[in-house]
Image (cartoon, rainbow, N blue to C red; front, side, top):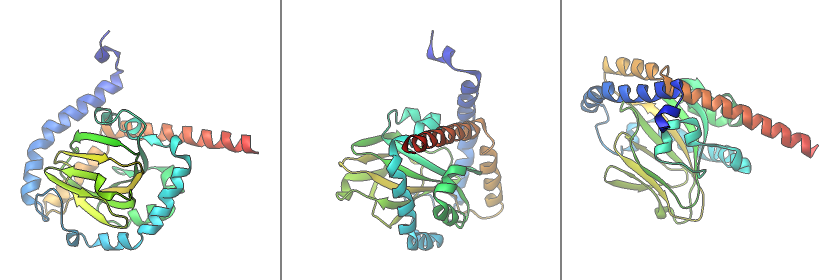
Length: 260
C-alpha cells in the first residue's frame, strides 16, 4: 500500500491546504515584496525595528528561562512532531522547540514555564509566533523556505557555541552567525538552511512578526495572517502542541511520584 493511501483524511486535508495556500499566496507575496516598508531583502537593518533594542535589553531574562528547559531536554518536542511539514527538512530528535505563541494561539504550558519571556513577546508589535529553538551539536537543517512573505523572522541568540562561526544560517546567498544577546531579522521566504557544526548546543529565541506595510496593505496582510491561523495546517500544529503538553505534564507528574 502506498504512503499516500495510509494517510488519514485529516493529514490529506492539511497537505492540500498547504499546496493550495502556496498557489494562492504566490502573487500576493510578490506584491508584498514591492510594497514592503523595509524593502525586500534577505536580512534587514535592526534600526528599522525599534522594539528590538528592548528585547535585547532583557535577553538574559529570556536566556535564563530557556536554559531551564534544557534540564528536561529529551522531553521537549521535536519540531516535526508539532509542525508535520517540517519532516521534509528534519527527521530526528536534534531540533527541539518550545512554543509560547503560534499564529494567534497561546501555548498554555509555554507561557506558564517561561512567563517573563511570554510577557516580553506580547510587547512586540505584530508578533504572531514565538518559541525557543534548540539545535543539537552537528545538526543540519536542510534548505527550505517559510510559508508566507507577510511575516518576517526574528532571532535572538541565547546560548551560542564558542566557535560561533561554525554555527550559521544561510538566507538566500547571505550567511550570518548568532551572537549571545544579539539579534537578526530576515525574510524566511528566501530559501535558507542552518548548520551547527560544533559539539555544543545552540539556543535562540525565534519570533515571527508582521512585515511593515503601508495601508491598506497592512490591514489586508493582518487579515491574511489571521486566516492562516484558522487553516487546517495551523490547527493541526495546535492539536499536536496540546497533545505534547499533555504528555509532558504526565511525564513530569510520574517523575514527581517516583521521586516522592
